Length: 89
Image 1 (cartoon, rainbow, N blue to C red):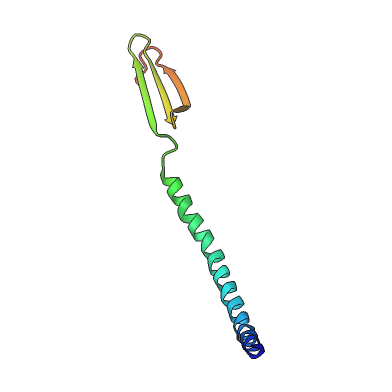
Image 2: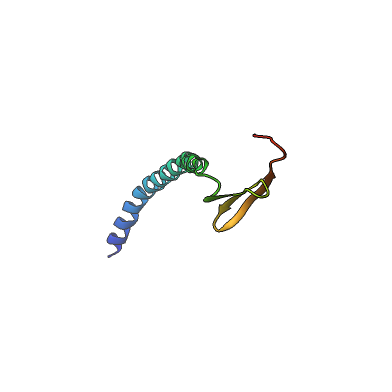
């Protein structure tokens, strides 16, 4: 039985450095791929609009326009603009 334990120790003694090197190589490969994965995710986020919905209301009587940008059912930006006189812009 002692020879069996010695054989197991020899086998694991030979295989352990190989396993450690392979594990280190895998860690390096994964670490090198993380920036490219983050770059892809960043490009996807850049392509998405910063809001889900746009609400535009025009008030003929006040000659006013109201704009709201909405994201996740929350108004993230709102502005009102009043057209003065005969300005057509």
